[in-house]
Image (cartoon, rainbow, N blue to C red):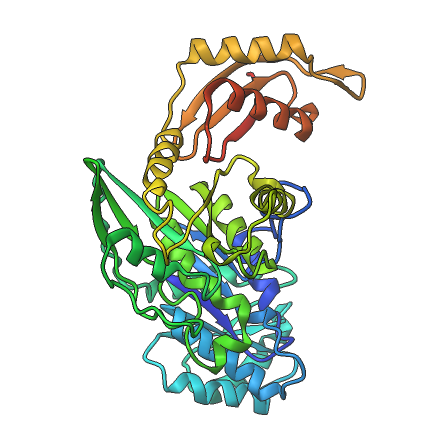
Length: 436
């Protein structure tokens, strides 16, 4: 199901990021604490009562030395474009400023619902500060405190009241859904065209020319697929050119709807920081993953060209060492059909369920080979392991004390599961529980 999106917008230093982190839970680093993982977050999933939704934080846009009003305008435009509901954040201690009124004028033009939040109202005595904010013209302001977490429940109740009705997507069991994600101009549209054999998407050398998302059904060797297009990874125009961080936003919706995610890299440009950010979101979403290096025809080849590029990918994406790599050319069509065999394998692994008796044999053998280390004089005991979910494969390990299950031993167990069952292209989740 498509989830509604909530954006927080407002002038700088009103506490947008603090509120964002309060709503989505603590700032959680993407996947594991290993090098090569980008932890910069401007987007996350959140929930309130029985509502699941996406959050955009417009607090962290880098626009260099541009005047402050230009920066605010860029933030507001992104939020207006992407969100179903907008939280307009202000600072109660500073009163209504010219910058607040500037944001308000922009928000008057949108047809999106706007909920006004007055932050830094830390106690009852300060509630009088919020009455000035009626002048902004967005109805009752909601007093909140980011530092103390006060008033967020009432604010989120009001936000949820404005959620649009989201239609349930019909999921066909026999269809593998995949998307292509990556920076602008890595050749995603060209690859889609090479796959389906016709011009389904606009292809241009100008970065960001794809603007409308369209899903494409396709069948190959008896297997049905649906290509979830990630159009608009970066919208044409000044705002998105200056706010490179926001080029992932539309891709995230496609990631949510996919079984397998193809991370497209440009062989000519190499690996950029934004590639890691996009890949981190796909891993965090628990999707099947593979790297597709496009424009391989444009590279001058030497003896070890492919090996060297593979080493670079593994160095920069240490947290995705399980994701296969395929080198293709959308222009010449080379190896494009090989994608389907790999997508199918990853989809099967993503949905793989292991019988409990076989699973526990592997875990017991692993412990015999490499006993769990002692922690604070206490040795970890693993009693039983069971698989509780697929997509991605998720295992619960029952132990005597979860606090002494070190992340390095969890990694060892994951590696043993991969050695025994494959799981190529899919993340694995291990949850540690105390046996009652």
